[in-house]
Image 1 (cartoon, one colour):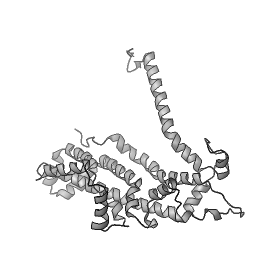
Image 2 (cartoon, rainbow, N blue to C red; image 1 turned 45 degrees about the vertical axis):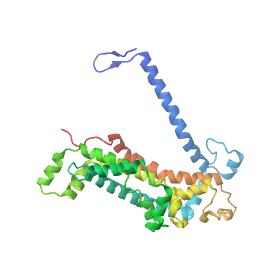
Image 3 (spheres, rainbow, N blue to C red; image 1 turned 180 degrees about the horizontal axis):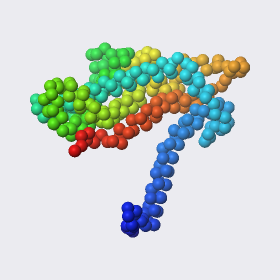
Image 4 (cartoon, rainbow, N blue to C red; image 1 turned 120 degrees about the vertical axis):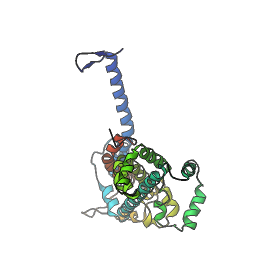
Length: 307
């Protein structure tokens, strides 16, 4: 049934339209609940005491929420140190990757560059084929000598071909007259890139920066390969070993000696401790994302110059 047009700007909708919209809303509410519930359950378990969890492990919300697990994990030296280390690695890798990828995209979006086709084919090949895990490991540890070195977690992913294609497509949409006007005024390539191209490309650069930041923050496999000292472990590797392999970090070995202010022994919920670590790892991205979301809404290929 088609909607009937009413007077003015109002549209009179049929009963079928209302039923369809209601069904859509209910469907998406159900999908949202299915997606959100596992995260809610993890958070609820992290707030559950050991006594309550042993009595009833499947609960919707604890009757007496406690922050003992969070207090304990942040009282150790390992979690705060790995937090700071992961923040540094993520910030450095994101800055380097965004800068290198965007500069490469700017250079290869020029039509007068010699060998442009060769470089494009070379980059696209690396997007579909890789040398493999063992050659990459040998290159990082033997050739570059970055075993147990944070550079192994920052430099290798400094160029993302997927992000390069996104940025290059955006740069090619910018009017050539912008660069021509800047050159007439005496600007060189660096001034054009940093003072004209980058300010107009903030939504696109923020988008790829978010891609890199999330990927780096959640990465643990590279650290497992190249890091030997637990003090250089990023947060995700520590939490992964703790949750998957029951390998409690060295700084968490003193749980049996915990006492409250009255001298009574504290029995921490081991599962709640793991869930608290999981919540602590995902929380920064949850906090940052709303501030970056507006750039996603603008789109990655929106034109910055109108008229």
